Picture 1 (tube, rainbow, N blue to C red):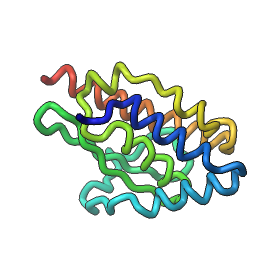
Picture 2 (tube, one colour; picture 1 turned 90 degrees about the vertical axis):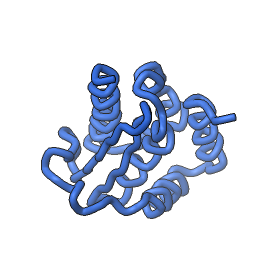
Picture 3 (cartoon, rainbow, N blue to C red; picture 1 turned 45 degrees about the horizontal axis):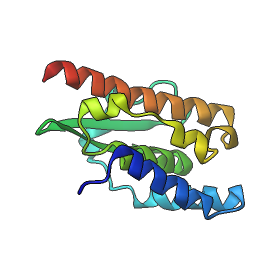
Length: 141
């Protein structure tokens, strides 16, 4: 059986709870960013840049068989780790699953309060972009 959005979010909470220190959590985010698959250069266009991020973050969204698939890249390694977390949760989900999801796992791992204000704003912008894409594709189906 496929893991639900909540299952994946709980896995992430469990992984982050294994670290006591925020420096270790940052290191983990950096590792996640390094494991993000390389985005096709043709998808690194202006129209794919997420607005509101201090660093440059490209998000490419494709609808296949009623599910959304995301690829992304960033010029900042921590930001790349953050977008990789979001992709892990939402990749391969239906637009409806994404729109119904609650993002409390972000608060449960303490991410927002341990990021600089500009990175926290970028995180919010990334989540909003994923939701906007889900909303747009849900209307197209």
